[in-house]
Length: 286
Image 1 (cartoon, rainbow, N blue to C red):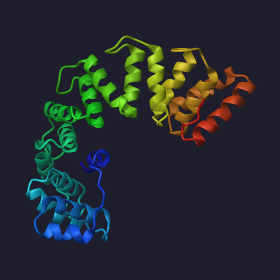
Image 2: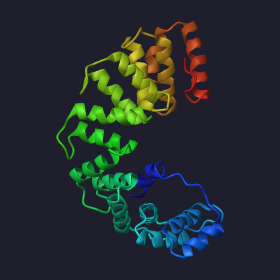
Image 3: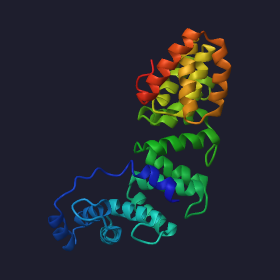
């Protein structure tokens, strides 16, 4: 469970401004749960004190036992990753659930992941949907995306493309590249929303600009067939090149087909633009 949970949870943890260590320690020793959590965080991240996961767990636990949701969440992470304490999925779930029951969106999302994959709990798509929705309703981007996937696939809930699109859009509007890509597909295929190639191109581009390789490939395909705008072999070349650079073999094969159809001048222009796009990390691709 470690990889799936930690990858996204770290993006949603509460912002933390490190206080003075001595003051925090004094307050923590007096039983202040807020200070105990902050002390655990300082030990976990080496802020104001040498990093020490065992001490982090100790202080997180003290705060968690007093009902501090942040500490419960972070203690769950420590059990999930085996940092400062033996890895234990059951304990991770226990503490995620305590934080989730207090409304912590990150913990709710992680419970959704756990139920979706059967990590530490029996696999249960309906439970996954339940917890994703709780987090998604609080604006948790990854939960919104995963809830969209559940609606699209009919997992734990009746299949509903319109609802899938609704949740993809919420995540896409927050900058989630995967959701932007899915929204592009929905517009391109008319799934859950009226077909609109121009909108498909717009959302593919948002995801492509973030390095989403499949969005880059699909964006190139849209330019190749003139969908959503004029046919443009140079832009096709650029975006298939970006996708190829990330290991997409379909993009590589399509480039081999495309090149003989282009003039030498077009290829030269496309190569310059592709280099510019790559070196700017997709920020200058036009």
